[in-house]
Image (cartoon, rainbow, N blue to C red):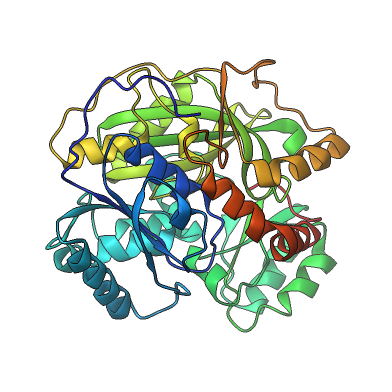
Length: 416
């Protein structure tokens, strides 16, 4: 689905560049960004793992720069690589990071990158702190934003002390976002049932456990909500959207597989106030959990970049967060408008498996409308079919096996 009618014109002289580090070729968010700006006539470029990724085959892509990375390279090497791509593009381009590594690199090397690229100016240390579970928790405490109770053990003895006083079950997560590219302590969000289970796991975490131990928010007493927004240099939202997550993959612990746009003024105000207090500028993707036991929204994740499911959200003027950023950075007004309440987003290659898993668990989302007002598919688009077929070619076989391994590793996982 191409979206609603667009009531504005973008600057077609300023291209966009999708920036991603690491090996995750089946990334629908990057494809969505290429389509979103490409449909406006904006020339689009992308960093890809190779020439056979779905993004590389979009009709809206001018050129794919095949650059295999792990996300663990030295920052100087990544900056040099980005600058080399910028010179090949030949004119200033808007940077659109799709992962934390890219967002942090851009923030921490603004002076070098500003020569060839356009991006929001943000406090250099802020994206790294927001991407860290510990950094985010500390910011929430500092600014009075609800978040799950958490502990950050530095040694095995700290884990033992936590185990003596903890109320189980608890949740273990990797403390830093970047660790997933290296050797994570846990495979993902992991539910820990009791003291013995925790100590057994902790023996494999080494002398310095890189984990956060967090309060478990039972899914039967909670709802998963998402906020996507773009904030200007004054931390004022130029586009802000709220929605509810229906399903994720791995179940209750992974990326969004199915979601709806749902108006939530309380949640929008909470997100706006927090971003204002910390002074963030740019695109945000927030995950929050509404705890019915105390009636509070608890912030779980603050992604300082575009979220993979951002195309769920668009206002009546045709503005999504990627379009808002491009308009703002090129000096154009960002049109206002109501969000498309009731609109649905489906990630085809993971939603069927998620649906089956959720049916077995009996979990339902009370705020999801019975009938969507429209559906945006992550991969299928009538005006751009090649990414879907490329995805299917890569997904069948190794991709499906990877999906199965994710499910196996998350059988004891819970929602974030």
